[in-house]
Image (cartoon, rainbow, N blue to C red; front, side):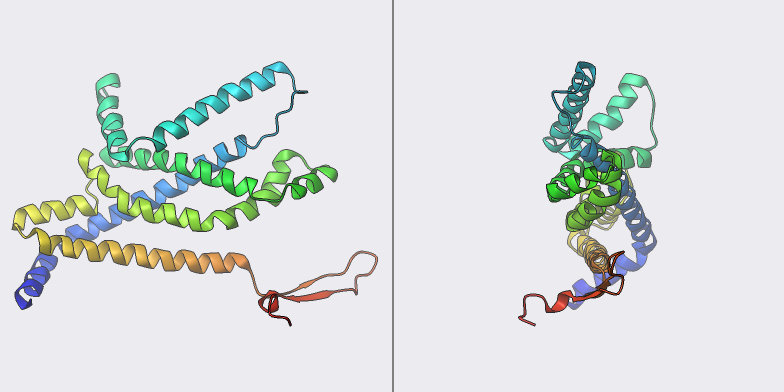
Length: 261
């Protein structure tokens, strides 16, 4: 056991700078991929909830169906194929078809972003349809457009509802970024594989890698849960009175709800 610990410390001291660089690359890919993927998901999720009725003109309805079919095909193809295969097809396919050698890190960012976008679009769509339909009707009754209803009423609630799923996708991207090693992205797994091959101590090297991944995922999970609680707001708040009776305030303490107080 002592020999194992000494070997782990020796490998860590020798490859600590490289492992740190790999960790930064992994975190960069996960952050950018999740944010861009969320942006893609928001656009697709909102588009799929645009109300289309038989009363709309034929051009609008046909155009919507065509775009909806393309988006649905994108979602199903991406969700039904491994990201490793997508990485190989994208990186080497672009080089073969267009004779362009893309930057490896840029390719990795695009692959993770596009992959995450397919999952995020369904997460966002689920968050949007989870909002009570009465809120749409109330917004439309006071003259709000669909865009205003989405941006002011629906999306803020939907994003809070899907925060755990967004966090889950972020954690998945941290771990799944290792598949990008197949195209040469020097993320944490790639560096670990190199160090293990150079030292011939695979178990010791990947024990270090496991610790790195655990610390990353555990820390980010705690940060995301803290953000979720912050988005919930305080347990106690005051609802101000109406225009006709501004003095009629209501004090609410949600922490006491359901406790018979």
